[in-house]
Length: 173
Image (cartoon, rainbow, N blue to C red; front, top):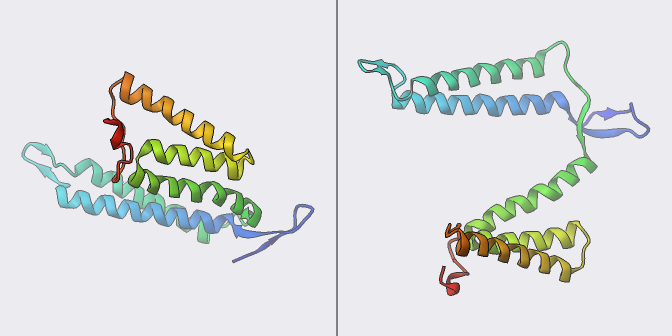
């Protein structure tokens, strides 16, 4: 699974592109099956009033299935398989250094709400990845979210999600 690409100055190790294409095609195929199956339950046929509630989504799911199966076939058995390295370990490390904090941020938004989670996310992002001082990171995170709080909650009267624990409840919004 880890071919070596020697086209550059240093050999690159990583997952070949055709394997990534096959995995993505499989995910698209599964999405199509889920959409088609859910649409079938809604009624994907023609009724006396016209198309059923699941008529068009069923065909969208069917198109997704066909596209996913075709792409997966080409990726695995095609004559022109792209065997170049999709991503090497250094590139994957960089992507994960952005992706993992973003996933933690999504979870934190559910628990702490948009304002607190965003302030923490901005501060940690600046300190850890941007190599800024902790004082500068925390200042920018808190000031930016204070500005957004004033803008949405006070001026526009548009309440944003405050999370399960609602730590800003003491402000009265």
